Length: 353
Ligand SMILES: *Cc1c(COP(=O)(O)O)cnc(C)c1O
Image 1 (cartoon, protein in one colour):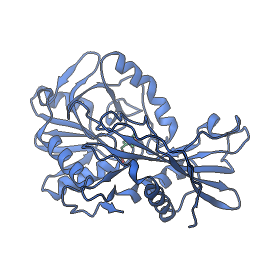
Image 2 (cartoon, rainbow, N blue to C red; image 1 turned 120 degrees about the horizontal axis):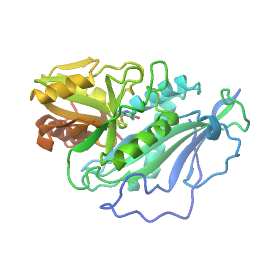
Image 3 (cartoon, rainbow, N blue to C red; image 1 turned 120 degrees about the vertical axis):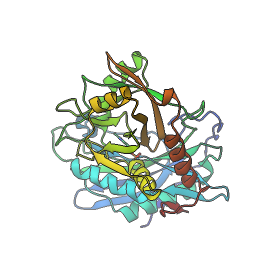
Image 4 (cartoon, rainbow, N blue to C red; image 1 turned 90 degrees about the vertical axis):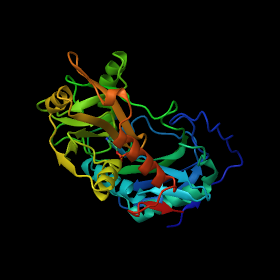
């Protein structure tokens, strides 16, 4: 692939690595490519990260035909750029695209684009402990027309943002509200696609949970409000009576790459992991009986997010005495160790540039 590079004399000042936050600063360059009906994906370009013009009738603004991904680049102690299972993200982008009727991208081409962009922006990868360069690939419908139908044109872009340690005040458990009114996804819907509408639909619930003092919501299934699906934008695991369980992928749950990595890591270290339907009542009952040992979320942003409290409007359970559980801590240390090149990569997950 021949990527055109448009350079700029103007570069931004790099932000302070101890106060990066998440998604606040963007690097100097981005990748952009167009899909034109009859031509396919064309014009791969690396160019300055700047606002761009869109027609107000652009389809994505009205009907939300769009998909995205999220992954991270890390700097090793030797100064190499490391990516964690990046092909998985582009494969999943295509799965999301298929559901949203967006034409697929070539995974090899997307990897090439990402690697080229990272070469240009290498100096933007922060090195301070816990920091990384968050990568956001996305595709959106860009035809200028109104009417619900597959777009005739799309844009595929990759933007980059240096992000700080997720746990600025140290690795600590979060309080979660068990959502019983709103749902995130339904069977046959778009829950297993990383598409904007899922997140737009979740904002009201998250906003109301925050007002009640919780940091995220635990989503139950859309039909019976009985089975656990996800926690915020993370997959969820429970350690219950020595057994590790996680909701089975049922079509309305997003198939997390961190989820898959955690399952492989646990199984590879002699733990048994069961993927099955998990009733929320079972979890509350196990907590009452003293059998609920740990609860944690998994996702690229936080990696592992220990849950210290689960609450409905009438009931509340405290997990691991509100502290970080042993297993959560071990998984966090193992995964971040591999991602940063500090621990052996026994599964061949790390791509070194
Ligand atoms: C992205 C995402 C996850 C986590 O996926 P990872 O690949 O582990 O980052 C889980 N649930 C939802 C709804 C997500 O959007």
